[in-house]
Length: 445
Image (cartoon, rainbow, N blue to C red):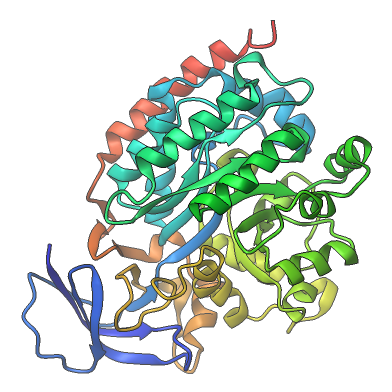
């Protein structure tokens, strides 16, 4: 498609003036060309959005597509037990087909709930199949194979040599970075300090700088994890990452629940990006990150759902609501207001991935990544006199997302997926997890 116009909508721009425009939005060649009332434009596709709301597509900065098949298989465990008993054996059991359908299942859910961009971390093996699913789905993604060259209780299929981990990552970067009109980008993904040697992390630092790409890892998620890192390195997570030169503006850290003041200072000074995952942190009993304080200190914070087995959904609307509500009993009712959280989910996510000039708000010249919401239902009314952003953050659900456009192309229209067959994905997902559960039983033997 070369041109598209959305007519008669309420458009929440999230531009610098935070304007809400009642009118039309015109897209040509994947970019927004004009926004305003009564646009007189011919377009190949016309969407009548009367009484509907257009928002920037959500940007989720921490996702594991490879884990979507594991939804419901690892409930009610804390982080390290969750990894060792359930997730690592299942990841070790993956094959190309299961990775492909896990990624399609995840991207389908993400698009269906209004997410247009993700930062994704795969597992050790078969990452090419995940990239194929990402390309097919139409979602915008920074993704990479997970890197693990050390650690205890790691199944043998996930144990890789340092050289193999680096070479496979470099090969995937060469093949996929910049593909699909730039919609797909590569990110180096060392799992966390517990699973990575200093040699590996140091070389990741060098490769990130050489290629100008992001590094995506976990840090300070759980007290047990921090204790292991301190025992092995003599330093806390962020201090260690800074010590080896990885703490910089190209580093995205998932979680950061248990930071001390020195670590917060490093994150601020080095312009490290933090991905807050409230649903996952609650379910794994990891804790509640000090987000209001970090925001006051001008630390870059965005949102992510993490993986399906530690959250059970990948819905940004759910994450926004949780991010706002969990802070209020601790810091007061105004500590995380709706607009702050909505910014974290849109332009904040765009800043985290260095794309704030391309996505994250609806402005002329930016890429056409957006969602159309139909907020005309019992749970959204009365609407009179209410703030549109508060309505979305506190009341909207994924069922209210009607149409999703990514890079100017329709990925979902009237709740119908355009680039994948939903029933095939659901059917094959059940077949794959049945196979993986059986295979994982003997993974440590």
